[in-house]
Image (tube, rainbow, N blue to C red; front, side, top):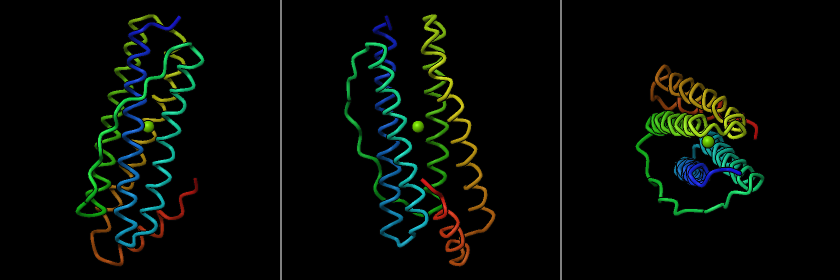
Length: 163
Ligand code: MG
């Protein structure tokens, strides 16, 4: 049986993943309002991914017989200064989520909860990818600068991301 403490920590992670989804959806809406369709599309796919992370955690709790407890999700910011600021925030947020996943994993190790450790390995790998992707996009934004042509080029590139 999964411990109450572990169930509680996973419920907190479900909340964090849903907040991530909320944040990226808000960023997507801001880009959409600024007619940056490619940025908006990339961020909307990111929103869907975060929702699927929460769903994975929910399914795991259900499999282990732990109670799912959906918590309050804070409102994300609604206005962003620029596409650069958005990706600075995406990167900072993914680093934050990585720290949360690492703490969760550490808790599973301390509790000798082997099933949860194995389950969380997918999230550990996923965070490596999330941070790498956000870093790469931010680097390209910085490299290209904020001329209109550079933004349009990036918008087109990001719009190519498939779901
Ligand atoms: Mg996530």
